[in-house]
Image (tube, rainbow, N blue to C red; front, top):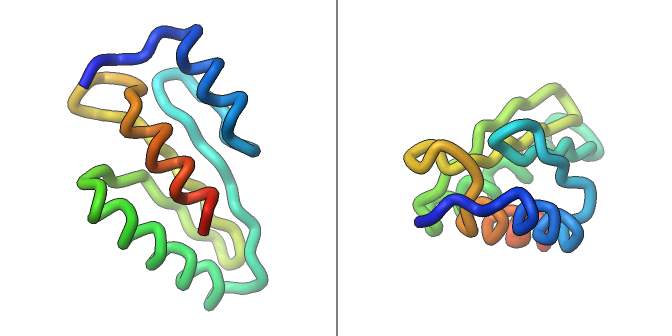
Length: 91
């Protein structure tokens, strides 16, 4: 999978609510009702990630979940990152 150009990354980010680029990755923080809802959300993300064989870095802080996506094997952002981010947004 090829790395995206900066222009392609910026165009993709325009289609994603609240995802931001941070170097060679994109990230978003989700605020949920409480810890139980955070864990349910993370489990849903895990199912999507496993199906896509593309796994985000996940940080859980009670009612906040931060997800970070990057295609580590390619050393940056690819279409896989944006496809999974879109699926996550639909949860």
